Amino acid sequence: MKKDGDDLGMWSEFGTAAGIAADRAVQAASPGKAGLGDRPDLDDLPAVQGLGDAPDSPTIGLGEAVRHASAQVRAAQPPKGYHNRVDADGDGKLDKATYRGDGHGGAEILVDLDGDGRADFIGHDTDLDNRVDFADYDKDHDGFLEKRMYDDDNDGYLDRTEWTHNS
Image (cartoon, rainbow, N blue to C red; front, side, top):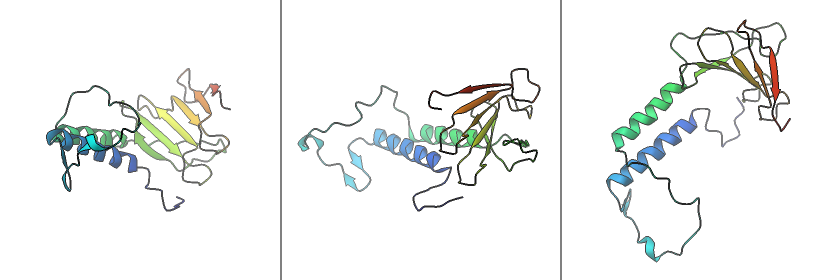
């Protein structure tokens, strides 16, 4: 995998989400307190435009935030014992793949075809029958998945293709 100094790896987003959720829970439990002492009086600061008001949502405790973040990480792990084999580039050879859960009871099969550290093929096995139900492709290796193929008759072969509007 290419390392350019600012790449935190494929799991960094889950750590970030867990950190944000935990920080929000702590702030909700102790309003007005920051980690290094009292929060400065924000009324004295000039108004700045940001991303807008926070959406309405119930306040959750720290335990709930940690459970939620843990569930997201577990969902990203491949289903226990899941292992599939794919020939993502159609050259007749099985490709090295990484597996992860899709968060809905299925699995995703990721293949980096050009060795740049990004998946150029993401196969979706929605029912864990070891057949790819649909797959997304980055055909020109630019980091955008512009092609989706479907196995409409569930025979293990991708039958139909749709291209995104950017391709």
